[in-house]
Every structure is written in C-alpha cells, then in structure tokens.
Image (cartoon, rainbow, N blue to C red; front, top):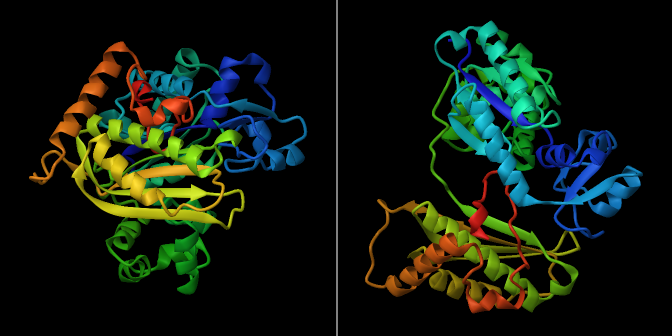
Length: 401
C-alpha cells in the first residue's frame, strides 16, 4: 500500500486564530504571549513575524529588536479550544479523524478510493476549502500524505504554510535526503548528539543504517520502529493512552517569590488532578519544575506517591516537594506521571477515599454551576493566578480552570 495516512497541521495556530478574530492583525507580524510583559516569551508567532526570525520561545525583548513593529497579543486559551473543536468538526465533515495528536494536529486514515493518490490529494484540498468556509480563511493548514503516520507528520512539515506533500514508498528514501536530522520527529538535541557520536551527520546516512544499528543508537525498540518508519512501513503508534498530565505558568511579577509561586503551583495541581479524574487515571509520581530569569538556573523535585487521584494526597506531596525551593522563580510547572487506568489501579487500605469523594464532589459542583464555583482555600488568595493554558500535546476542557 503506497499511502494510508493524512496528517493535518494548522499553521501558526494561536497567531492565525488571532488574525482571524482581529482583522487589524492580518498581514502583520504578531506574537502570542502568556502575558504582556518584557520578561515573557512568545508561545506562537505569525508567519509575518517568523520571517524576521521570531518563533516559539523568543523573548519579548528580543522579538522587539528582531522585528520592529511586531504586535504582541495576550493568549486567549478558551478561544483556541473553541477553534480547535470547530476545526475538528470541519475536518470530520470531509473525513473521520482517527486521532487528535495535539491542539493543532490531527491524523486521518485513508480508506477505499481515498488510497489512490489523486483522490487523496483532492481530499486534502477539500479539507483546506472546508476550513476556509467553516472556520476562517486565515486558519490554514499543511497536509502530509504518506504510507505511515510518522512520514505523514514529516510531510506536513515539509511545505509551510498551506502546503500539501505526498510521500509514497516509491519516493523513499531519496525524498527525505534533503531534510536535516532535527526535522524528524523523535530526534531532539540529545538524540542528535548520540547520532553524531555514531558518525551520523546526514539524513542519507541515517536512512542507510541497519535495524540493529538504529536499535543500538536509540538504546531500545524505538530504533527498530524508526528503521521501519523510514521505509514506509506502519507500526502501531496510536496507543491512545495518556502517559502524563502537566500544567505550567509564567508568573506575573507580583508572584515571583516562593509564596506566590506556591499558590500558582497549587492551582496548576488542582487542574491536573481534575483532568486525572476526568480520564479515569491514577498517578503514582508527582514532579515540579521551576525556572528562573537566568536560563541556566532551575529547580526540579519529584517523588513517588501511592496511586491516587484526589487533591488532598497530591497537595500533601506538593508541599513536601516545595520546601527546598530557592530564589525568585519565573515559571512553575507541575507534572503527574506514571499514570494507570482504573482497570490497572491497585486497591490499597491506605487510599484517601474521603478525600477522593470530596474532590469528585467539587468536580460535579463546578460542572453544574461553572468553573471556580467552589475551590480549595489554598488558592483563594489569587484564583486568577493561573488561567487556562494549552499544551501543544493536550487540549484542556473549558471547565477545568
């Protein structure tokens, strides 16, 4: 089978939504930021801003120097979630969505006559037209069509914005040779270093390595998967299982101290615990990460906990993790890791059953009367300290605030 998957990537999603909503931003360099402050960084940039080198992670102060006239817009995450669902609905009117990969990415499985290349390309163009009609002409997407999900994702990145790339088995591996190693999903800075140690500097060399060699470089079965993916073979990548839940927040200036940061950390943990219960999962590890204005400085701490999903157990663990925190923090992140499902959860005599019942009752009240109707006293000092934020790998529920 020459093709099977269609991968769709919304171009500069947050910035595109802002340009769709605010006509005066169209055609202008725009950066979306978590707050309007010089010390924060862009979480998205329009293509007009990208032309000047502004990208995700660029500091506001640097972006001003790189791109005179750039416009900064404070993120409206509820708006982005609404657009996300509008996009899903528009795509579903053309072809079923097999999986939502992130806030701005999704993948569709081609079947029947769609497996013919010209029909698949026609489908991609239909999706683009439907997005323009039902979502907005400034919300564009790049599409990759390929025999497996990995290559479909790679294809969606090869032509931006508003691109369409088809990769068939007959195109392999030569169609990949122009790519840099970091262009491949799964090759970050650390993996690139490992490849260089093994003498791999170019994609052409990467594609020529044996399955055994790739397994050795990756240190496990993922290397074998990579070997298959580069050759257009399909292996199971959509487990549908959430491995972790995380929330992070850049602190406003008045909360850049240990006490203020702790308030925000508690709020983030409440959000994470809400999501944990909503998907019927249990966490056995909690971790915190705190960064500072000095990029080289950070604080990390984590601990194992008895499998739980109630706020009380998690807050107690957070309190213990927080005690050694030094200095004046800039950003706080909270993770819940090593998740297991209800079916896999091990019952224990030490479970905080009462705490879980209270946590579930809070969920029900907030679902009925609106988010924030009831909340824990620990966050009452500043309920708005950590509003909804979107990770590129998850889409928050609007009521989870």
